Amino acid sequence: MMKHRVRWAAALIVIGLAGCQADRVATDTTSNLPPAQTTVAAGADIRQLYQDKTWLWADGAGYFAPSGTFTAWMGSGDKTTYAKGFWWVNDQGGMCFDAVWHVKDSANSAVTCFGHRTAGNVWYQKKDPAGAWYVFKSDPAKPDDEFQKLKAGDVVEAQLQAARTELGVTTP
Image (cartoon, rainbow, N blue to C red):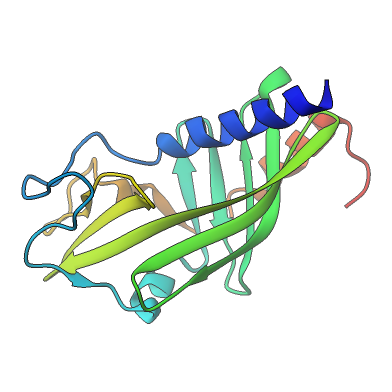
């Protein structure tokens, strides 16, 4: 039974994070090759993009604390899950978070990474290692850019506590 819950939790994480990716793929991409005429985003620029922001997802959100802590929640009722871990960036265009995702009576660790490239002020993103590149931040910005789902501050904590209560978790 525990094995099935861990698989369910992993599947829920994948489904939720898939919602982070827009259906729009950059027109000059082929498979998972980076868009033409782009450069790898610098780690400092990626950190500035995410630091102290909450990424709103279809059924949840993840918060990237300035300290490097990552917290998230997803789902409701029997599908409630929450995560605690850490996040980091690198100078190869990557942003990753490593968190333990908790569901009723079990938990599973997962590392999720996204690649970033830029062309002028346009940002491209893909889920690593095999996602497709898409426009993450347009220039000028568009209302449906995935970047628009990054909101200043921590809007995860209240929902994370609600998820913990829903799962009956009493320890920090």
